[in-house]
Image (cartoon, rainbow, N blue to C red):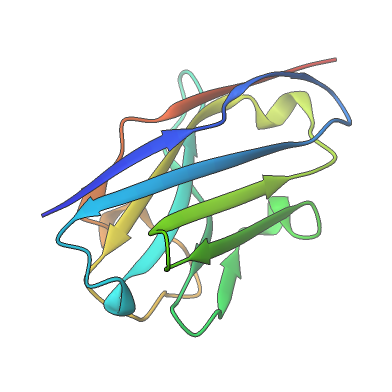
Length: 126
């Protein structure tokens, strides 16, 4: 079982930046996990933001390409999401997730990930 804890959320003005972190513990086998970030705004479905394999290969949703960067540091079992040029539409609860496969599908889908954190809130004001 993998435990995931997100941090780094908060309030920021449009155009600003923020970095989210996700600390993993428990049965890591980090070399075999595809790690991902998701978000869910009120009244909307949870959507995939980005994912990363051990090799460093990344996947991004079209709406964050060029603005968000996903990265991982397996020496400290931590996943990151650097978010730049934030927009009010980015306001949501952000979740990290993990799966027992080192393959991340091109389309980041919540159904592919069995392990989830509790989320951290991001609010972007205009």
